[in-house]
Amino acid sequence: MDFKNKVVLITGASSGIGRESAIEFAKLGANIVLVSRTLEKLEQVAEELKKFNVTTFTCQCDVAKKDQVKEMSKIVLDKFDSVDILVNNAGFAIYGSVSDLSIEEIESQMETNYFGMVYCIKNFLPSMIDKKSGHIVNVASVAASFGLPGIASYCASKFAMLGFSEGLKHELKNTGVGITVVSPIMVRTNFFEHPSFEKMPKFSPTSLSSKTVAKAVLKAANSPRLEIIVPSVVRGAVWFKNTFPYLINPILGKAFQKQLDSAKKD
Image 1: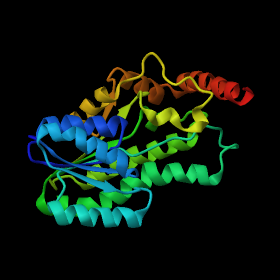
Image 2 (image 1 turned 90 degrees about the horizontal axis):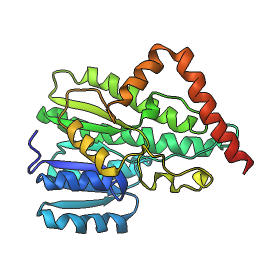
Image 3 (image 1 turned 135 degrees about the vertical axis):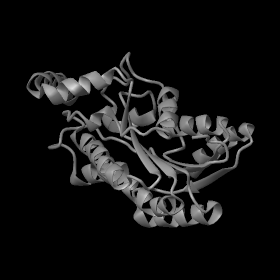
Image 4 (image 1 turned 120 degrees about the horizontal axis):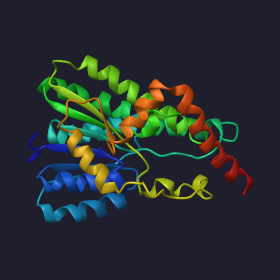
């Protein structure tokens, strides 16, 4: 897909992967709709995009609130008629065992990570189907394939994201609309600034830059594949886990449980 003059809407666009994706799309001439809860940060990103001479539009919206998403989509569609690429990137995690997290903390992750994606798709998909073109990019995580102690509720939201996307991909066959999930390993963003991660090591040596993942988002926006794992070598680990779960799950479970137990002791 040639991105020049295409309308790209990105949620969670005020920082990290969302911000970098906006920059990469703008470099290629796309018009950018920036969506996030924090208007001030969105305006800073919009200011950065001015040098690319593209149209930018900011919308303050909490995607966990379906009424806000409905209002945001109406404003966007009134201005642009349709969205060519929808990037569902907004998401966060709260670290802790299921027994220690409150129900509200577990719900909040599902509301933003999963239902936020659903709300956006439900509001923008009809116009894509009407014009028989468009692509949805859902930014998930390798946690969509590995259930891990300490982030069980986050994993659940990403499992749901991947499953929903796979089912929807079948439904969209022959409509002209595509859908692709981007599943990165750990990314160096403000994701880990949540207080629950205070006692955790912030980034591993293998963690990715936001720009690396943003380039995968651009690739996904023009891909027939269901899922792009970043880096691609990790696809082998997913295959091993699905093929030999009785070998892989105990190893991963022990490693992450040790980390969780250590965090509880501190």
